[in-house]
Image (cartoon, rainbow, N blue to C red):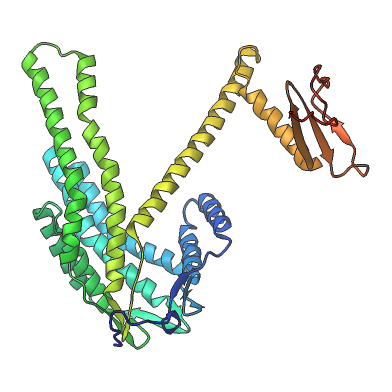
Length: 410
């Protein structure tokens, strides 16, 4: 592996860069996938996922050449059918025992056992097999990727990691992730070059603790406050006041509502940092990967996206509600008591369509105390102006018109 001393000037042309290209057509592809998925009652989602993967893979360019995804929707659909065949006996046994079990405690125990089976057995197997499938269907310059390894070995690593994470109340989650990443990466290859990962969980555990510490303390504070409210109401005796109890409960829930966005933002930051750490400790043969992604920049992008999406959603819901109330008022009251929002929306839509059809340019001019607007239409060959603001007001005494020049101050 080639090493470079710190401070040595390096030309960027000597390195192969990984670039993401913003290719057009994503919005249309999403609309097509959504429509066909709805029409086919969800069956098309396998082909939709394949189309999206081909789009994302071809958008990643390494040293001037894009990646290529060779998977098909039929392969994903066949894999889903095989998964259903494997899981159906366990699901039938679980449903039968849950229905015919006389004791509710047995039903609860069977439900817990099924979820444990799902989390510790089926999901890890599905993740490992899906990673193997994606690696085998990825090509670059005709070089195909691949992945070996044992599914049972990965299942054992995952089970041990889950057990350690639960016993330490989530603190050992980075240790489990790094063990999974090391096994999957070391079993992967690209052509005749094998991938290797040399990272550890030590740099990640402290950051993970910082992410979960503040939300955890806020959640504990909320639980203590809720317990105090319940204890106070029980100690008072008699029938508790519903209004006071609701107000105290809402106040006790404030730390919990503060902890949720803090934890979500911290989780985005940590996942980005972990992704960068994994890339910086991964090698493909003699090539060392390197990433400069900034976690706080990703957090900013995600927060801005959800903020703008929330505003857009609120506007759409407001327009739909206003139009619905307007139509309901017209139907029930004949339009006498209905809000004018619906009529304003209709008039605005008609005017917009008319303006789009005519392609006119509107210009407004204002003078002290009076206003008039003129519209010049490109389709009129004479280029004359048409006054569209109703009766034209004459200028007050002492105020010059548009064509007259204003007296300059002395």
